[in-house]
Image (cartoon, rainbow, N blue to C red):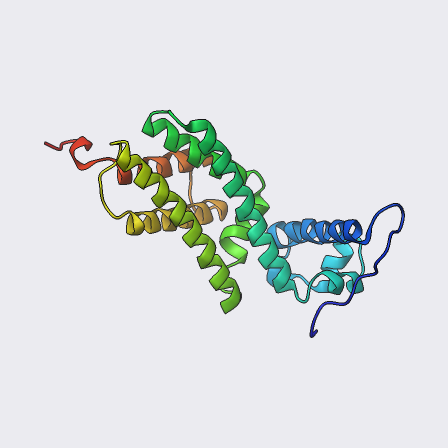
Length: 220
């Protein structure tokens, strides 16, 4: 398929073409979340199956997307955007809290949002892996965005005297790798722990990364 088909224009049923298009796109993405995240998975889903699950036609699919990979790309961004909004909202409310409490609030906001629906975990940490060079580039770009957010918070903590002065690029990358790996393994059933236990362990890891050297147990 060289490109998307042109969708009809004009008003119908009291709704504009843009409103109808947004509704169709939402229905395709909602259906894909279920099929990719809790059904046969991205690799086991066809355009016909997705269209049927959305209650739409394959022609309508090609009016919104070129390929199923486009759908997966959109879902991956949607899941990450939701989690990022949750973290930024929590950050605004956590200003002024002690470091340990602030870190806990921020990471619990992230974990609560991305694990609220198990399908989101599968999209973020399982289905997106190994699909194509394009999606790998998108995955790494979003990962870099999370790393930048953690670095910014770490740098702010340094200015407040709550974290050791250092370049936090590598520690932030290592932490994001731990988040991805542990949440993937937890969602796959390979980790015998509750979600709260997983989150608490990751919070301890982040706090240890930020803690100034002279405040660590046994120091000085």
